[in-house]
Amino acid sequence: RVLMGVIVGAMLAAVGTALQALVRNPLAEGGILGISGGGAFGAILALVLSAKIGGGEATVPLCAFGAALLSTVAVYRLAMVDGQLEPFTLLLVGVIFNSFWGAAIMLVNSVVNFYFAHSILFWLMGSLEAPTYGEAAMVAVLGLAGFAVLMYHARDLNLLSLGDESAAELGVDVDSLRRTIFVATSVMIGAAVSVSGIISFVGLIVPHTLRLMFGADHRLLLPASLIGGAAFMVAADLLARVAIAPSEIPVGAITALCGGPFFIYMLRREGRRPLSL
Image (cartoon, rainbow, N blue to C red; front, side):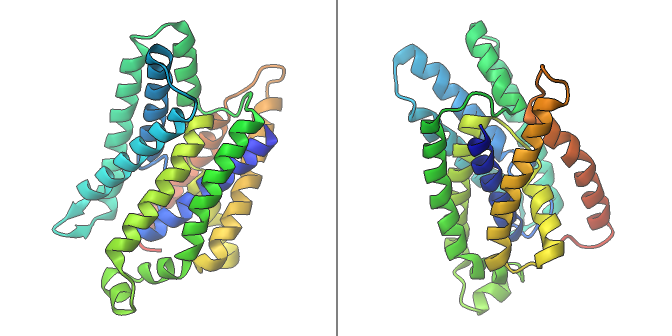
């Protein structure tokens, strides 16, 4: 369980760091933008369908990745206004997609039996309960593959933070970079939500805290977020287990209680000036 917390926390924090640079929005994060919700819906759908028509466990992260990628591309495209990415429009579209995926999950929940309804509740609230070493290994491999792609493009992410035109003038193929990062982050989010459900705000709290310590250079910030996200998730899961022991709080509730006030603070701070990194 601790190992799974390390892996999931590291992935979510690294994804948040990359997405904030990619869309030039300091409030971007997989859970806030509806990407985690899409991945959770894909995982739930795969879980239900595989039980009815057959299929291996590998279909769950695969479907989670596909739905997360679909959600990422749709949110990004819908947030484009006259060819420009509008930061507040991006947040609004993310909220809409969160509502859409939540409704889709509830629709599935209303037509399945009690066993699947319990599993769906697990995905909605986020939990690290009862993982296996096989699941941890699978998620770790997918997460490391995605993180390697992010690190390879860390310098390009630094340049992209300056704006599309400036990055292109400095030799960055902006469209190709966005496609690559979208796929890498979708793989990481899909793998994470397929075993832990929707755990939000890790990719918001950790990167911004570490920027105060290490600056905005993604060659340093990405590995720092990897370590910081792992530590934050293990601490949150520890609190979830001992706060009302012997009962247990879903770890997604702990991260949401921490992340909600932090998000409001960031929103008010950035509302006083143009959104930028």
